[in-house]
Image 1 (cartoon, rainbow, N blue to C red):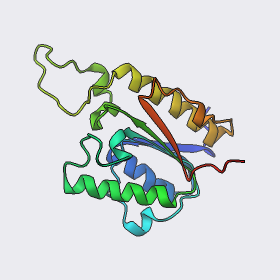
Image 2: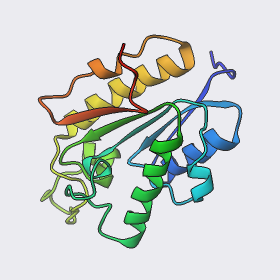
Image 3: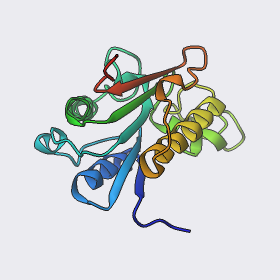
Image 4: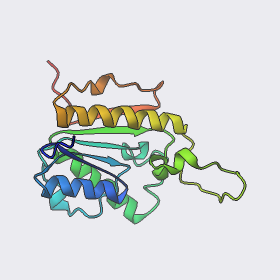
Length: 180
């Protein structure tokens, strides 16, 4: 049932950064997904290398522009993370970015699905964003499945045709595909 010739890796936050390091260093990993990735484990010279493997990053809209509200740019570490991410986009031959408006770092975890602000015994949590948890769930499920089917099973990937949910989700391919 398990195809050890077609291995994909996926992680949230530092797990997303570790996934990217795995793409660079492990020939057995064929594709990777980062969910609101934090790429601190990467040196600049590593971020500027082409993995020669497909990479998908799903994250908050602030990854597109540090002037957009988010929780990345609130610290020196967050600004460094954006810098490393930009280097990845410049250098990796096949990267797909999915940016969800009104999301924050923990929007991309299971916590978003189970946590209810103001519920008895809940504590205030400000890093979930105001995005609808069902939207995050749909986007992640559909995009990740299509991406791994494409990168590991050689199926079609209609990335530009994915649902934008009335403009709430932005899709970008890096480098931009050549128009014919």
